[in-house]
Length: 265
Image (cartoon, rainbow, N blue to C red; front, top):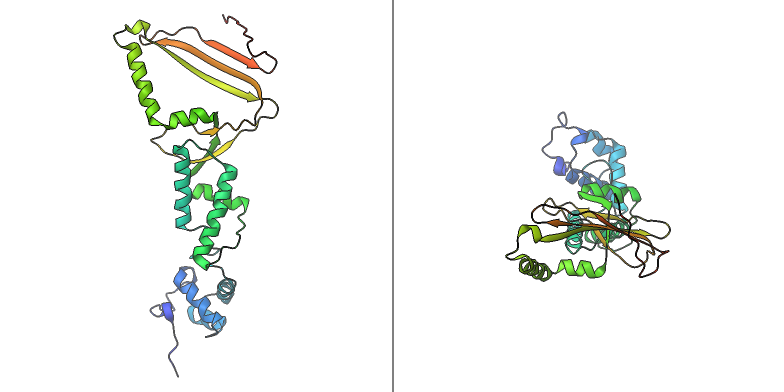
């Protein structure tokens, strides 16, 4: 009579073994043994004190082309390679000031799920990723979601090129060289745009970088018709004096060259 093949269970004493300690290697081995009809599930269940229902479940999953995990439940839909790909893409897009909308992020998860399945099983069949899985992986990837700020394509392109920053620094230096602080002026402004009709905020997904405090932006695609435009700015001197705040309003009822000046007391 041939010796019973214990495989990865060979050095385990029955009285000390607990079902919850079954490793991924052991689960796969049990499933393969049952599927190859070496022994039935109840034989291994009795020998290793593992519920036969679990062994049958693992065997069925492998027969159907699924992978097992080292915990109860299905293996992650994307592997570590795909996780790195998604993180690198989000970081690259942020550096280029090209936002990733939540829909773009969802499509990225779907694409990498297909790539993961291809590496695991050798096929590229479509993988359906649920909404809950998409949201769950946001936390696993340490990704954040926040409302994006609208920017024109020209501004994004100008800010991305470091040569423009160098030229601007040279210009500022030339303008203020040898001047008194009281006459060195800086115009600081901020602006807001409200579309005409329903206002839909763009939710952007990004990887938080502690060394990058730049805002999360998205490119203006021209789809929003202006309802109101507001810009506020003030002049500040290098000596620390600040002039009165100026507010500019523009809406769709005004002519192109129309200007209204209102003093705010």
